Length: 80
Image 1 (tube, helix red, strand yellow):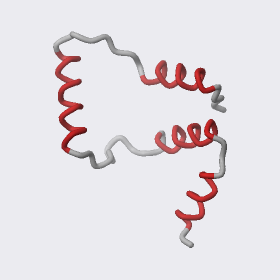
Image 2 (cartoon, one colour):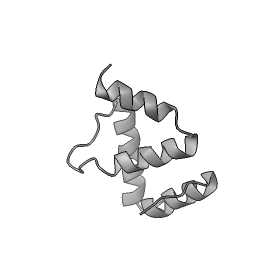
Image 3 (tube, rainbow, N blue to C red):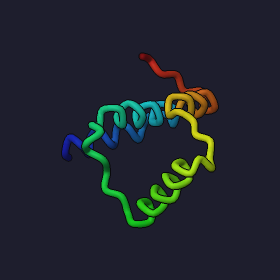
Image 4 (tube, helix red, strand yellow):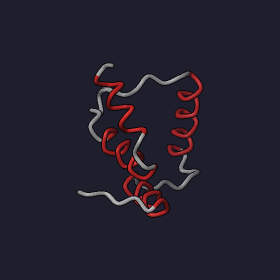
């Protein structure tokens, strides 16, 4: 079994709140210049939402605020 498979298998055994915390921690380690490959549909959605932001027809929130709201809702605690 590869290291990846071993880690994935172990991560799947974690409670949901700990898996969400792990996802957040891992996502924070991905460099900004290494974005994931996205499908055409996702790219279209990003373009649509970006246009709404540029046109100032939507209200935005910061990612830290959104993340904290979700973590509070799921009772996930981060250790910073």
